[in-house]
Length: 194
Image (cartoon, rainbow, N blue to C red; front, side, top):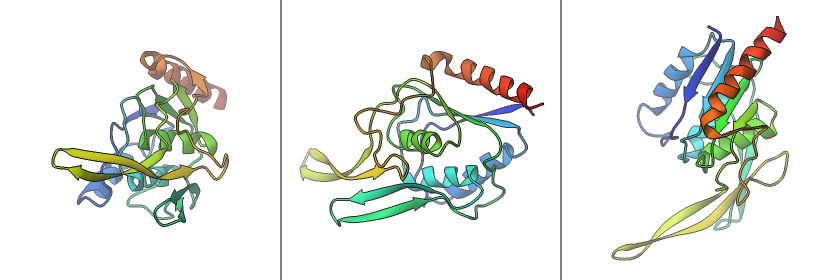
């Protein structure tokens, strides 16, 4: 198989029963492909642990993706890929393209930013939405919730994140044209590799 397309529209809670198994199965389907396109154009976030789990399949060894600072505790926690995953890793030798849009947000941006800053792949599409801090939701009344930023994620490479500015694509194109652009890049890369 030449290149494979994987669309991730949400990162479900990693500790839900079946989440790890489903991720393992989806990554197992693509394990023998020569190139991978991950579509995050409709991804609005989700669980950071699930982002890390997906990223664990894309790196050969434990890799520091980011550090999370929690204002409530004052602690900084490293976020590393796993050395072991269910099934087989895709690895870091095969090329990767990640599609983004202005609607890509939060966890989708964390995935794209790590791919970009760690030089694991190429971001194709639009600048993302810019949600780089994480929130805690507090009930403040019978019908009201308050969402307050309580922490931030930062890259070990840039020492900052994408909050308020978004992830700038390596190859800028409209979201509608991002898949075609990535496929052209993938085919050119494969031809040049021969």
